[in-house]
Length: 302
Ligand code: FAD
Figure 1 (tube, rainbow, N blue to C red):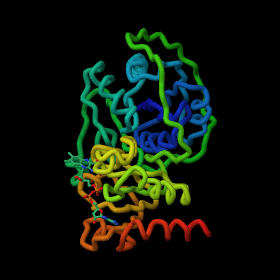
Figure 2: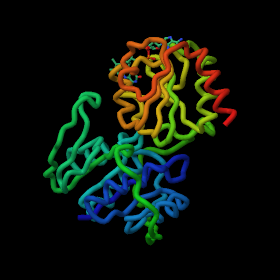
Figure 3: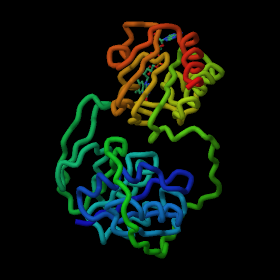
Figure 4: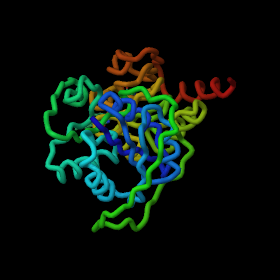
């Protein structure tokens, strides 16, 4: 049983999510990794459990990745990606080309054809069997521990013969020194009660002090207080940090769906009856505008 994993990249470099996806995929068989940059190839070749790295100068587009995976698909039993923005864009295209039903958002591998995945916004888990001749899968990276250091695995350059109808014209990336939300170990999240984009500066300051990523509820994003890519939850990012600090967040089910993997939760909320208070490990009841500056100032002294 052979597996091909599509590497997750972050600004052309290998994302830490790839080591988690490789660890999950290694339960199915020997793992090859497909990457599109030589920098990512070198990093991926040092992940334990990787047999071979395939490097293709695929245009950085879902169409290009799907075509390249399709070209290589005859060699593999499993074609795997993260349940990320990239995976959600690429794998349905690939599945359609192969005429296969993909199994998405897998959080546990129970056997060669048996997988567990969340449904109803994470409120239930279902176990599915996939008896198709080939398997197109996406894994929720945060549900798996990363593979360790290994290798170096051999690197093979493959010619990109795919003619795509789509061309990449430009990419725009917001520069930031804040850690990536999906893989950060600490996340500070702000709710709509933060009140304004300026108010989110308090959240960002605490985040910077802790070396944390910054997240937001959909209500805060919809109000224009935080950018869309900070949204955590059912319709945002799924995170699994060691520590999540929820500031002025009620704990609606759709938000909780994104933070179920958090190992510890600290809630700062003025309402002792807020749902997040019931599930938090540590609770600070009070006004966030009083607590945050004091907490940040104390942490800065450390
Ligand atoms: P609120 O629920 O209004 O909570 C504000 C909290 O702040 C309250 O607990 C209040 O006690 C506290 N507070 C107020 N003032 C202060 C203060 N001064 N100091 C301290 N605490 C204070 N939401 C998401 O987050 N992510 C999603 O992906 C998502 N997807 C959704 C998908 C669907 C289909 C739907 C219908 C909804 C979705 N939502 C999502 C929205 C979700 O239902 C909630 O509306 C949202 O999470 C609430 O955000 P909030 O906690 O910021 O606001």
